Image (tube, rainbow, N blue to C red; front, side, top):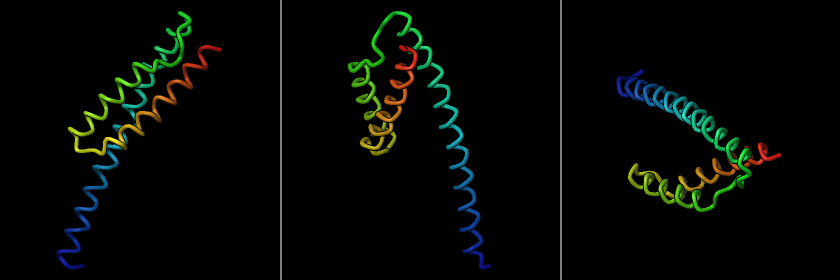
Amino acid sequence: MTDAISRAADLLQDHRASIDRLDAILVYTLGERFKHTQQVGILKAEHNLPPSDPAREEQQIARLEKLALEANLDPEFAKKFLNFVIDEVIRHHQKHQQ
């Protein structure tokens, strides 16, 4: 193997290790987020509040789009990601309502 190929293989391995570490951070962070949203769902059910809060959701989407721009991440991707998470949270909240 040439030196250039060997260096490329080492860099590839380093990048993949970073990606794996970041994936773990994402999963654990989402787990922590859902612990809190589960508690919100329980509170909403106990106080007969609707499972969805459109005004809060709009604020969060706008906030995430701003953060995405600051992080050099496509804000449209960030919006789709947050909408996916919000949909899942609402689904969990609806389970508590039943």
